[in-house]
Length: 525
Image (cartoon, rainbow, N blue to C red; front, side, top):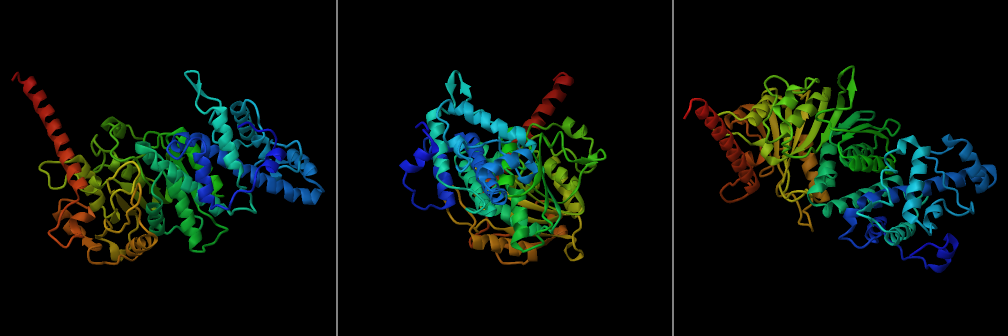
């Protein structure tokens, strides 16, 4: 459908029935083809919804100024002369100043992809903060001569987005923010393996934020921030406690993938939060530095990609920031999980605390095996230094890129005296409800898990305080499933954990065979 003019469209269309913002935002996303195809077009959909919010808020600001200067027409002239009067200046002026700013985009009738791209670039040019964020996508892009998103489908998307107003008087920042997060989650549901690169289940982030309990004005950092959800959850946790709103958190994040970096920035702005999100490989090139050293923070939250294999021992040896200390260091090439934990520890100030999501195998790999295991050696260093405060074992099938349960490791550089020499373990593997396509932790479950972790409250089949001496006796296995059994029958270990350990043993055997072969070749056998 081509657009023939804003006024004609308004006259021709009946008002749609009321819908929740979440329902509308998903319906808009599905307007291209349907729910099945929506996730693959997320790089087009998210910037357009973001632009709609910018347009409607700008509209409200122009109308407010118009009341002061006599008319909207005059207000457009005033803000064009002084961009500081609005948060984001949009160089979009409708032919009729009484029409919405969004109508400039809604009424494009020819070369829609080309025109939308031009408008997005014009907005970015006027707002350096949005450069690389709103103008990253070319709505006119082609692959082998075929438009990735043709004008008809783009037009349908624009029209679907146009149905609901997203201005200051229509929807609060927290509601539009929640809806945007909902949309990102829906994209994750259909995103397969790639979903883990940008989305952590909201209930996991909420538990992490509640337990870390950030205070007003604190600096919070996520070295693998994805779409920024964990940082946003920390700010929301602060607001939920009614803390000093004049001292918001200082949010910092770094993300490797350009499209996801843009998503994080849009997510932050649409939540009406301000943060500094850098782009690049945190492991090899951390961007937050001070005086040649890593910048440190009050809190760190993270869900790094699990079991990364691309980092070699040479990468660890080449580190210039003292992240990989003697006694810890290289955790082996098969998984960088504990390498990320070392980066996170190095990024904490002297009173800092952290919560990091890891594969369950990171809590137990190498324990009980004959010989040495590099990953276990790093884990042992953290236990012996008494830096681990708690470990949370999550339910299975929560994450969008795996059915594995995962654990959350809580670090504390300044453990209270009463907690020193101990680690608090929580096995929440049974605290969930079945969902489609993924399980989820209900609100009562979130509250139960968070309260248990905060209070160090022991409960049968859920939680235990374990002395470091017991962890050492169990060869530094810190998996809650090893110490807290949820079944009434004979105790068992989760299948995913057993499979992970078998894979590790197989990899170790291959390394030993390779080393033995090299030795035998050298001596001529």
